[in-house]
Every structure is written in structure tokens, then in C-alpha cells.
Length: 113
Image (cartoon, rainbow, N blue to C red; front, top):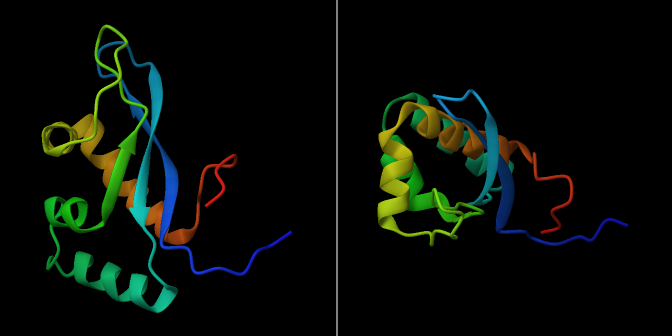
């Protein structure tokens, strides 16, 4: 059944490959979801260099989910965690790429918005 609704967020998987072990791990990012016309305009702004990765995360990332520290303890989503994600190439690119997947509608298979 399809429910007609104006979803405003979407949760997508973010797969991070550990640079030392090469092992993939997955967390999730919940992003603002734009109507198609608006997301296309946003992509043009991004591609023109008018929106940085940092600005995209600040404006559109609602939450990061499923992240733990090296002892397995859940890590809260906060400014430090987001800055950490943007600091490292192995985490930055997958996070930013997940915004584009979110706008294309690639929600997690089990996720219901």
C-alpha cells in the first residue's frame, strides 16, 4: 500500500569502509527530503560551489544513527560527531553521497518514513 504523504525526511544507509581493516560498516543518516524541483535546484547550487559539504550537513542533516565508539558504546549525534565525519575522507564522502541518494529516494529497504 502506498500512503500519500508529504515526507519531510528520509533515512539512508551510509557505508563506511575502515581504512585499516578494509571492513565495511553501516550507520544511517536522516536527511531533509526536498521535492524534486527543489532538490534539483539544490544540486545545481552544490555543483556551482555555492553550498559546501559543511553547509549541506549543517542545513540538511537531521541525525546520524547507529554509531558506536571503539568499546561498542552508542555515540550521540552532535556537532563533534558531525565534524569528525567531515574531517576524514573515508567518512566524509560516504556521508555527502548519502545526501544525493536520499534526494533520489534510496531509503533503507526496511525503513518506513
